[in-house]
Length: 101
Image (cartoon, rainbow, N blue to C red; front, top):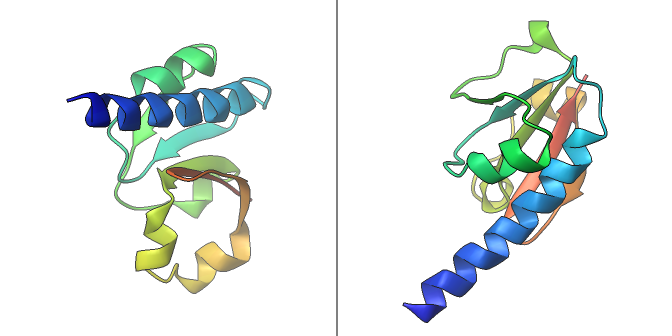
């Protein structure tokens, strides 16, 4: 339907912004995604960087970036370590980007 196309188009625009931001960051920092299934737009606009789906965070590999659905922060309280180590660097209506150090 045209409504679902508009939603996906809006999400692609947000992913493009996240990808462009990531393209300007150190290639040494890994990019993880949690609860996000659209990876191709992120890969493309980040300059082909590897985007790694994950279900748990390993701070031993920090610094890294984490892409999540924006609503995740509303639904779940992040754990203490995440609150201490991660900074929200880009928040949009549908997608959030954090940097963990």
